[in-house]
Length: 317
Image 1 (spheres, rainbow, N blue to C red):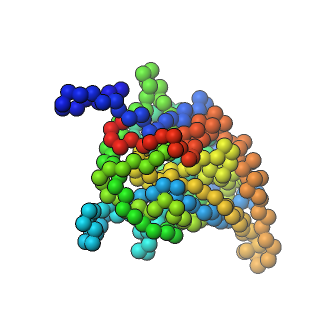
Image 2: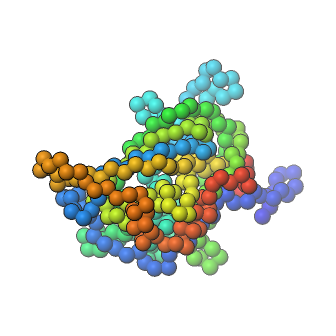
Image 3: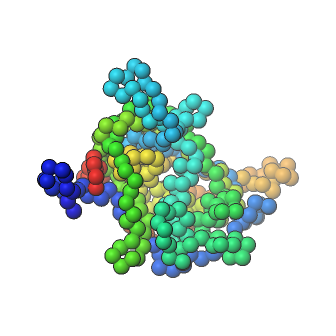
């Protein structure tokens, strides 16, 4: 593809910085959610903590512009999200990032899209009471149902810096192929950081954060799927979140998971018996039963890291 400029010259557009994970052929199976009215004896509840490392600068916009009086080059920058005055990755961004991966690698409904058309088999159920929920809806929630996981804001342990990023525009609608079939779920690839003239306040590459996720009433398989979506299974990959993903911002690596399961029955009865906590490997093995391997293989190829072999586009693509 070429791009035309006013001078009459033609210049090749940069390669697309994204690819698609195909949608599954089958309709997502529906089951009643676990609910929040009681703890299920066979389900898992507890806390998952892990280390998040920024492999490229991370920018999650606060929606504010911040003055930098001492910075003559960039006196005004797009500010990063803060919690209690400390730069952080909001829990909602983490939850959305992981949910999008879970939806892509499992038979789940398409819940968030700018497309005006969706095949009926991928629509979320109209009635939870009558039909139940798909896998991602049971884990992360749906309209009228609170999910079983909660991600806390992950405060920065490092420094912020000003990143001159390219000006990005709203993505074109590229959801369908020439036969009007859905191309799948879009994910942006990793690569070498692109530079531009839009100053962003970002958490520097090498910064770390603490991931903390509380969960209730998850099966081993559901918790295992989350661990796989964090990039802890095989094939491994690095998730991507925040703004500037086409310009290669937002590459993160999640490592050092620590799981602690709760024993609600013992807690309410005053018993000191500790809950049996499965190992990470056991849970990943269980979660693999719910994963669509062709979709996981495709996603891992898109999100493989590092990608020193590709430069992210500095302009139109």
